[in-house]
Image 1 (spheres, one colour):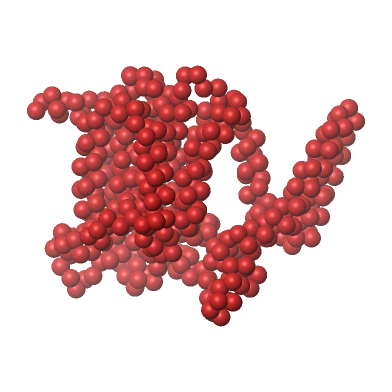
Image 2: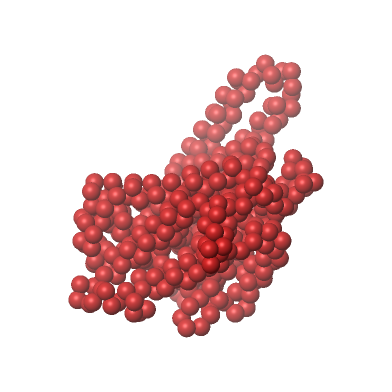
Length: 447
């Protein structure tokens, strides 16, 4: 018995474990705040299994069981079965197209019976992290070569592509966090610069008149040519490069961006993006909406109701909040999906700005603890996996919080360890505790 306890506790980062436990407990309390009924016996309902907070408590107990199994496991298992688990994850995601259950417009769930469902896209984040860590830690890998970079991008983006096909755009965006890991391992920074510049150009296209933006881009190009005129005289190819970049930017804002919003994205997706920058969108311009209108003669134009109610709830909390179980917006059920995607609003209303900062501070401490664990690893596999965990958590937190305060389109993404959902809680538990197990064996060199 003593040996088992010693094996379980040796080298474990208990600060990370306690931060994890604190966030899970906060999550259950947040769901309780959303569903609290003063007319019911809340003590018995916590163990009834009929409410979402009681179900989340069951999910937490199951997750604790899996966490204990992981802590008792051998770290070499995760390197040995990394590629096999990745293939299993892809298989489960493909399986959803055949036997998947449609929930909230997303066919990304596999029914397990008893009212429980599995979302393979959530679980596949773990398998992708292991597979990417396995590939990037190969001894003979030269990550400066284009072939190696493309393979790594393919490992990370294939599940993202399947998520998009399942209409899970939010989870697909999370997989972009693996680019942070690849930059840490040597991916050229110009790719990040190009991606950021494209994002800025898209936002500018939405905010500025197309002709005005084209003139601004032209003036910027002329300014660059003027300041670099001496270098251009020595190297004429620089002029060609500048002109090509100008043409690409103007073409993107005049043709590519409108085409994507009107023909690729669904009407509700485009509307959410426009709502983020405070502008309306005419669904009659959207090809998908036109097709639906031709079929049923009825097209409902979505609005930003969720975000507006979310802002009202968070804003009503003020500096110090209305208090535990005293939120009028939460008690009135005004915010849709408040126990899942918009769970952060319950924190903002109940505990205000100061409480929200303290709440996000717990997440920040967890992220910093993971980064600290990453940098002390002797094994490249463990280090890369730790950065994968940090990147996934960061993407989830940033997108979810920005979504609830209107700084990001509504894409339907849970807040880690807080939002209601068994698949989400279990996947994040496994993700974090594999890292804790690897960190406990940090003196080992795993490949």
